[in-house]
Image (cartoon, rainbow, N blue to C red; front, top):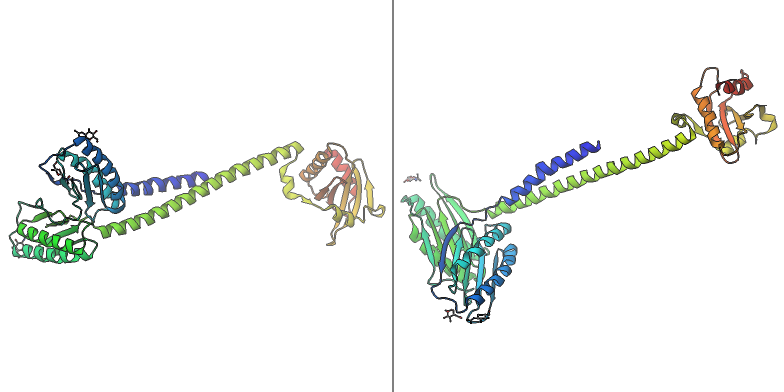
Length: 414
Ligand SMILES: *[C@@H]1O[C@H](CO)[C@@H](O)[C@H](O)[C@H]1NC(C)=O
Ligand SMILES: *[C@@H]1O[C@H](CO)[C@@H](O)[C@H](O)[C@H]1NC(C)=O
Ligand SMILES: *[C@@H]1O[C@H](CO)[C@@H](O)[C@H](O)[C@H]1NC(C)=O
């Protein structure tokens, strides 16, 4: 695979899978519409101290919300000590919850200079007071909102009744949260109930019993919400839950997809870098080799065809360049007959070339021969170039005048 292709594929993955996936994640619904806001009638005695406390407290709670979808904190000196608690409805994801709190923390100060109040957004709520209210299940400020649209049908009212009473039984044993929906032939009801995290099972249960009574009093309205100090209850004839189970599955699928995509991208990047670096190194080596070769003035194809012989192999083949094996001598060197271990007969030319250009001259000689390979010319089998000697190895041709072939024609070629 070419470097350009690899890079293209990496970027393709990056732009067409990873980025849209990330955008999808931010495409959450923190449900920040204001549902209800109620402020205390009495005023704080020292407002500047109260505001100072508020800014401390919300920063603390913001962190808790991201982690737990719930948070509380207090700051300041009595009688100006401020207690604040916030919680998201549990169908929100942690990210949605943090976003909802970012919104609601700016709405709450609208109650100042009151000593406190409550704000309900669609997805989260906040309450602040100059006393500790964390375990309150019910209060005189509890409130319900019923829609103007009504559905008088018996089936809708029966569905709502059965769903709500079933739901409030589940909540205290289900981490203080439950949602559900019921359908008949042409009707459907969706409901959700959530207790404060600070309430125990009994307080949650009694808060919800009160809330259910209020909600059922909303019927036949098609929608109702109950905002008690310690719990929240909502029903409607349409779906409004950010299904946390679907969320969990989506999150799992999403993180798996991200994991796989990141792994693929990293792999492709690694391959791309590998190819890139490999190519640079290869090209550099190639260039170096080429410059070495050109310094020796040698056709690189020669190397592909030639074979290096061990000096000792040739020594043995020619019986240590014995006089008995000497075939002749010319201007460039002596020629010996040799026999390789495998029985092949060879002619070894020992060059007289010496001095600084020694190696270059040998290669030049080889180059000329290899280029001039010809029916009438002996075939060059290889060479052995060491500090001791420069040896060229040829095919041994019995019926031809070696002297002529090796010295006459080569000299002419040169
Ligand atoms: C309000 O509290 C601040 C300290 O937070 C203090 O400096 C200031 O004097 C107080 N004001 C009154 C009117 O008590
Ligand atoms: C809360 O504020 C009100 C009005 O300023 C005050 O009367 C009351 O004592 C305060 N409560 C506490 C517990 O400080
Ligand atoms: C559903 O059907 C019942 C009768 O079976 C009817 O009274 C009711 O109005 C219908 N509701 C809707 C929303 O169409």
